[in-house]
Length: 350
Picture 1 (cartoon, rainbow, N blue to C red):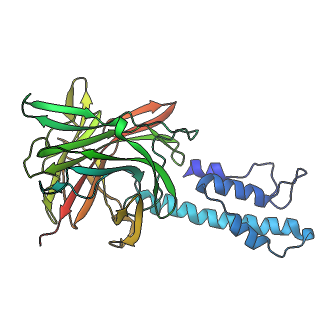
Picture 2: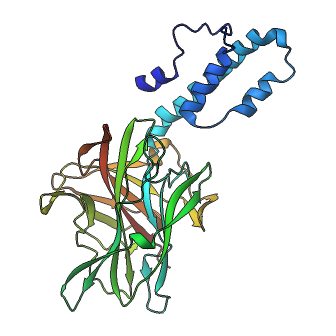
Picture 3: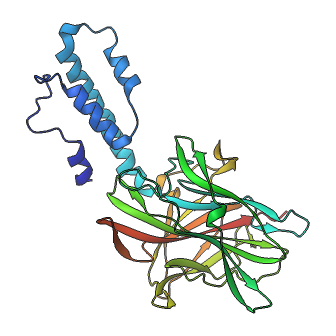
């Protein structure tokens, strides 16, 4: 909080009551600082306050705008720093269905976005660094079991990714989409290692290594196998065969040398995809209302063996993000957490 408050503080030499000799007044300073934090223009707000004001009252107006802007900024910071603590960033690999029958088409659509799934809130530009430059993912592929070779095989799908713009309820962010043909039956473990994303509010980078597992035909083949990413969650229950109310278990792991090891006592954030996705956008209608902010993003802990469990209370997609599972590293001189994310789907019994 102290860092954010320092960001919005006025220069000590500035007297908010008066415009300086260059024509900069408190309202301009407040406007710039508010935009710096929220990245949202407040022109309509300022125009409303400025309407019908005579030139001779400029200093008085500046002070009024300054006071109102600071009030608004405090409210925004309260949301961000108090309520917003629970609102987690979640990397998603979304597809409508995780359990397909052999009667269904062998082509599936995948949407890759970095967003806030419960609120259908702010969607980030994937791979954007501090300057705003976007770097494509380091890896995107699918792991399957090759019966003839009797081993797991990874197929690189990076070239199949197509840039898209995804619309949340508050903004638009850059992500990716693809249509992929899956042949035969078995498990298809889709995985993503995105380029680091710079979070200006925390002054740090985020890298959320993500998996989703799709099954066709009901025959299991790879769901409980590690892709051997730098950090990942390996399921202990089939993530595509969960009834509402079932317990989903997993183990948080990270790569050490040439082997995967559990991450003891990992902290895991859990979020529900609370809005349907239609095309490249969130639907406006929410499925549930959170009674309090702690229910937006729930937090659970793994045990000493890196294992965790969560009972899925509602049908739909659930995301699990093991924070810092891959450790804390540096990227472009800034701290970066390497998280492990998995998405699972629950279905109602009918």
